[in-house]
Length: 330
Ligand SMILES: [Ca+2]
Ligand SMILES: [Ca+2]
Image (cartoon, rainbow, N blue to C red; front, side, top):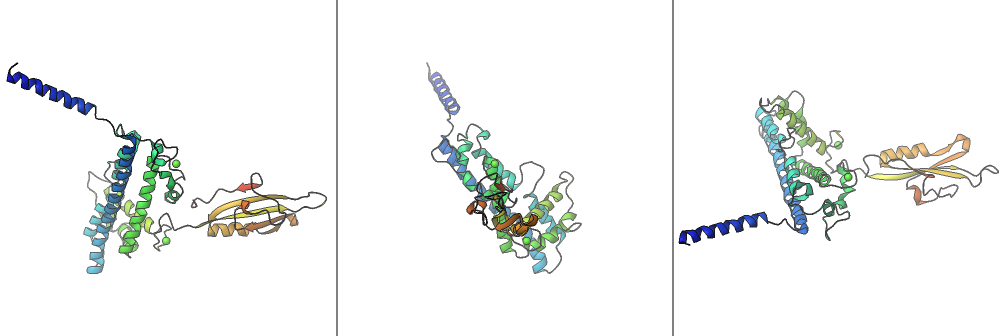
């Protein structure tokens, strides 16, 4: 074999080794894959929060220049800037261009086994419910807290974890923006007022939803600053900071010899914010049915104590009737 022949054989061998090396590139170990997911959540979370604050801040900076510096009404140029910025927050085209779509896609790619062969951990390793790995991420630790952001009380998928992240990050951003711009709610209200400002920005023919998307994005951001829409900003993450209480309404039939010793009790338990609980307790009080039934409201769960008059327990169904909790309560 001449030198050229040897070179050719060598090159061929090299190429074969390279290609087999590529073909044999092993997927990561499950624990490595899971840690990559955890780290992706860190970097994506940071970028989402920073970029969302930057988008809203860029809009409000332009408003402040009009209003504070020049003492003029919000200009067309500022409205245009705000449409551009809020489009990054809400984009209904589904092209993956909004900040939220990017966050979800990048987390999906590293965290969801459905993304492909390089995600070798299981969804259970993410949630921590019956994990296969010894050390899960334990997203299920957030089950109850995430109900404040619309969660169903049980994080069973990567997407549900993403939902909770988006909700909590949005709240964080709203609080930061309001702290920086005490007039944020007022200015966003003016920017989005029907028939004015942002609504007057003409979208390009190729992108007709640009303005309506941006206005919707600005309106939902307003809701984050003022969840109950009363015009008073209270960007408490997860709503207006609802504190829920549980009350019990004991309905007792006293023992009336010789009919019904030792009496009877049914109790109704309800969990809701303070105002609803007050109404519930108000309806419960006092005797009824000519004194044959006594209703007693107690601000505690029904299983906390026996019925006040008969002393009968009301710990389990059918004596204990649980009214579904108010939707705002975890
Ligand atoms: Ca669920
Ligand atoms: Ca409010």
